[in-house]
Length: 332
Image (cartoon, rainbow, N blue to C red):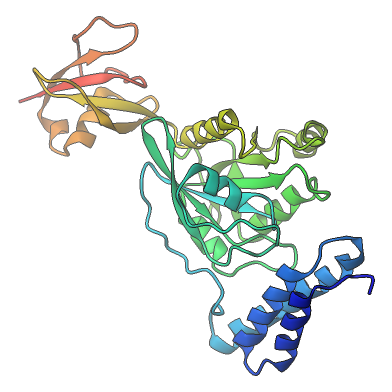
């Protein structure tokens, strides 16, 4: 048998043939996709299985009047500084990335469509925590019906591209086409700088190029940069390289366009465990309002500690805050 089908695949195929319900057929077909050996002799079979799975899922939606049982449920509660959703083709490295940076219960395999529902996890950029959400794969022939509603509620998006994949240069077009059809624009910038057009959702984002340690990754990066033509920034990462993972965390933090401000009470040390996040270009008055909503009206003056300042420098309400400032508020 040229395809060299495994016993696990054949058993899943028998389950599919014997399935009496829609859900049983979907389960069996998903297992067939996972167990199908991946080589050139099975490419047509793989495409056919994905087409059949997409058709089954659409039929499930039609019968139930909504998403089928395996579709994502939108609405993951935001935590930390904000929420960033990972998008990408099957096996693009989304789950591996989140798993390498958090304790999220992701499942990493060599098979596509392992992630069946969104999985949130918390990553850290220095002392700031950011929520990252792994999602079901984007595929040219099928899209989880809950994915785009989930994305619209997020703060930002990161598109995963696998530098080791033969279809590396096709993956951006898959993702961007799906986003455009859903009237979602992912653009360079920050949460505070992006402006949506009427009828469309606009959010900041970038490309994360996974498997940057692959022997052909540097060449793939050059072609990928040419294909994107500056449309989105590219951050190459390898899950085995801590430096690149830190660069990814920094890039996620930069999507929010904020600076970190630490609060200090008179006569006490600064609280450096949980910084307040103020939009870049914000003032000490903006910081005061984040500490307590009444402080904006009751503000008198503040003292600031930080790089390039003398300790306890007195400032007025229009003082522009900078990342790392320690501020002591005085209110009336």
